[in-house]
Each structure stands twice: as C-alpha cells, then as structure tokens.
Amino acid sequence: MSTKQSRINVWVEAMRLRTLPVSTAGVITAMALTEIYGCFKLLPSLLCLLFAILAQIASNFANEYFDYRDGLDKPGREGPRRGVTEGDITPRAMLRATVGTLAAACAIGCSLIAWGGWELIPVGLAVAAGVFAYSAGPYPLSHHALGEVAVILFFGIVPVNMTFYIMSHQFGLAIFMVSLAVGLMGANILLVNNYRDIDDDRAVGKHTLATVFGGRFATTLYLLNGWIAVALMMPLLIELPLTIWAAPAIYLFGHTTLWCALLRRKGRELNRLLGMTALNMLAFSLIFSLIIFAY
Image 1 (cartoon, rainbow, N blue to C red):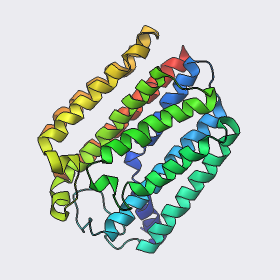
Image 2 (tube, rainbow, N blue to C red):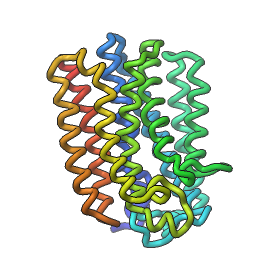
Image 3 (spheres, one colour):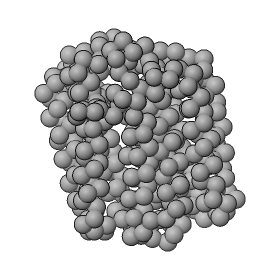
Image 4 (cartoon, rainbow, N blue to C red):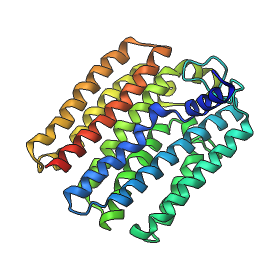
C-alpha cells in the first residue's frame, strides 16, 4: 500500500464512517415527513443531508482530538484505531480538519437560509457549539454521562424538526415525537460504543452511562430505546398505509436480534455490532421513506 493511500485510509477511519447513519437517518426520515405533509423539496433536502454528514464528521474529528489532548485515549484501545493517539495524524492536523470540516458545514447551513429564513442562524450556532461541547469546554458532555442526551438532541430532535421546518415553516407534535424516536435509535450507537469501552473509560475517569450505572444498565437501555422509539411513532404510523408497518417491524426484529448479540459479546467483538446498530437505524429510515415516496 502506498504512503498516500495509507494516509487517506487513516483519515477515512477518523471519519468513523460506520457511525454516519446516525446523522443521515434523521434527515432521510424528515424528508419522508415532508412528503407526507406535501412540502418536500429536493435541493434543500440534499443540502440538509450534506450539512448533517459534515457536522458529524467534524464532531468525530473533535472527539478524537480532545480525547487525545485530555489523555482519555491510549494506544491499543478496544475501539477503532485513533489516528492521533497512535501517531498517524498530528494533533494540529486533526484540529485543522475539525475546524475546516465545521466551516464547510456552516457554509452549507448558510445556504439553507434561502429556504428556512434567518431564524436558522441560532440553530446553526448551537450545532457548531455542540460539535465542541461534546468533547471539550468546561463541562464536556461525553465525559459526564450526557453523551446519549447530546445524540438525542443533535442527531434526532434538531435534524428531524429543522429539516421539516426548512421546507414547511412549521413544527408539530407528531414531527417532534418522530424526532425523539430517531434520537433514541441514534443513542443506541453510542451505548454500544460506551459499553465496549467501559473498562478503558473507567481507567481514565471518563464518565458515561455505562461506567456510572454499569454494563447491564447499558444493555437494558439499548433494548428499551428501540422499543420506545417505535412506540413514540405510533400516533403517526396508524394514520399511514398499512405497508408502512414494514419499517418498524424490520427495525424491531433487527434491534432485538442485535440486543441478544450485545449480551454475548465483549471488547473488539462489539465494533461490528456498533456498525450493525447504525445500519439498522439507517435501514428503518430508508424503508420508511421509500414506502412514503412510493405510495
């Protein structure tokens, strides 16, 4: 493998591609919701999708940089290889990549003002602040057992509601319930991550729900999150064609199967399970959207 290709692979790994469904699923689900309410627009939808992906990549970069700076990562960890910790990427390069990716996301966000209005600015600023607040600042959310709450907010509530608002200029209770459901699905990806890292995190004093309440709590919450998510969407689902029930049925089957696997695996074995949890979430959003757009 050439040096150039190896360098590219290191940066691709730093993007944490297997976690990106957590950012895309919310926007894809919101696209289906706008189609239900007759206000779907293709261009702003695609821009919302690109903004969400760039914002998550920036968050992943920031998490790697600040965890290295604060001494929370160590070589040979159970999770995916950390380029900065292992010496593959310099801290300065990672910080520059974080700022540059976030700047690109902000540029895309500014273009959405044409559809959503100037009221999008404070939301965009909150998202930019969240990129850093997750791992940095005086009270890093991921270090104080608030990572899952951040995921629910920034990868569920914000993308679903704001994507819908940009095209409809309104909010709604049903939309909020779906956004909360998507957030709970996304939080499960972080739960697997933190359950895998429970020993490493305890060793460096990092507080997550898994380290504070234990592994059994984390696995139980994983199961409950998926079932509660589907329950939250019931008011909307019962108003839609019966074919729409294929989406939650397939999701719950996959979710429960993954939970059973979660109980039997430890350490590096959970890396694949993390990716499958993300793919299950993405599968729900895609199936849900395909049925809506095909109807």
